[in-house]
Length: 464
Ligand code: NAD
Ligand code: UGA
Image 1 (cartoon, protein in one colour):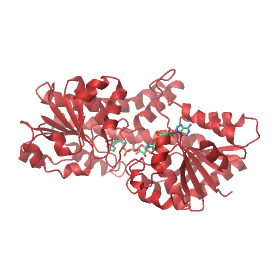
Image 2 (image 1 turned 30 degrees about the horizontal axis):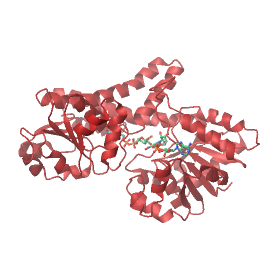
Image 3 (image 1 turned 45 degrees about the vertical axis):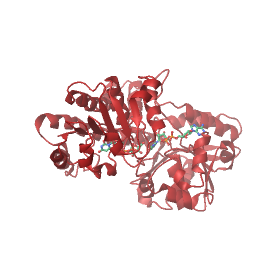
Image 4 (image 1 turned 90 degrees about the vertical axis):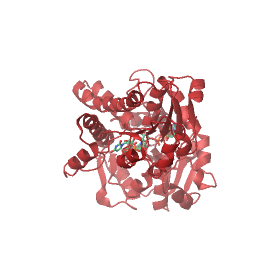
């Protein structure tokens, strides 16, 4: 079976880049990315490709090449569903904020809406691909909805979780460690559907890197992969606190441990805590699933990863207050970096949000600078927490357009995102324009301690 038309529902951080790369690599396939968010679609269609809604290195070039050739962005969801042989569902699956499983389970409202819309519109057989990260066994619920429409249309459901990381999305999509495709391996129709998706990826991914499994393994592998990655960060962050008490240096420890080929060097960078839209949400989801099966020890084990991460963010903020003589009330604190990691404009669950909220509780005056995040986003992130009024946030938090401006007349600086440009700042000048003693808190182990101390900073870095 050869796929000619792909539809992707959800033009977000996953749908947009993933489909752009598929369109680039498979010029004979028409790819239409649809979304109910009109503003987002308009931005994807902006004549100036630099204005596309997601910042990822290399993405605008791909969009420039493929857009209006075989890559289309539209709000006409029904038309795209109707035309497609294969439909990717790439909508958001955030943590539930209400009802059963509140604060833990994944909210599958948007997934179900997609399934119902597909069921209503489809007139011919289609392959449905779960691209969103979903609880294990969601495919069974999707199938139930799709198979009960009575219109005779046949659906095959595949799980094809996405492993890209933001900031390196294009690179990850072009050279994935693996592509995972779960499907109904027991029926000829299931195998044919899997083959069709394998063939799409095989246009650029070596066949040995394309794994096929049963659906449940595929769904659960995605949650497991994120849990393992986040666990490594929490593990090294736990050690960072011990390093600070003992005189050990967490970078040296990470290097020594990571050189063991059984452990490996990646994802052992101590930080102010992991952020991003997925690690916390996916682990909470995993904890919830384990609990629903009565696997309390399994649930508790994974929950510790989140507990450690929350602790790391809190203790970083608490250390600022403690170091500044136990009060930051009325003091100006510069926050360098708001995105949850460098090279992305995504701020979801960024540690900066929580550190700032903590400092606001202590009545600090906060000035934020991030090269890719605008003031409205910073305010929206803080307002979302509902811990301070909108007026108070706008009064106490200022967002500026350069690091130098943020740091001017500050009592302390906190580096919360590892943007390269922070390494290149004229730190001597920054120091001269600050109040003394000038405190510098490095939440990313980005800066060199010796050169900063030589300038005169009171320097604090996670894990040393
Ligand atoms: P996102 O919020 O950026 O994008 C989701 C989009 O879906 C939104 O633009 C929303 O308007 C749209 N949408 C929701 N319901 C819709 C509907 N019924 N019809 C049309 N459009 C609809 O989310 P994201 O970051 O792209 O994540 C999507 C999924 O991929 C999540 O399940 C996430 O866990 C998973 N994932 C994300 C990443 C990542 O790096 N962000 C990586 C791997 C997997
Ligand atoms: C992560 C996974 O890496 C992807 O494989 C996965 O597809 C994705 O989640 C998802 O499912 O959404 P992402 O969150 O985009 O990708 O970015 P990461 O590079 O994993 O970083 C996550 C957070 O951990 C960031 O805040 C980062 O700064 C932090 N981190 C990462 C550390 O503090 N230390 C490290 O060593 C690595």
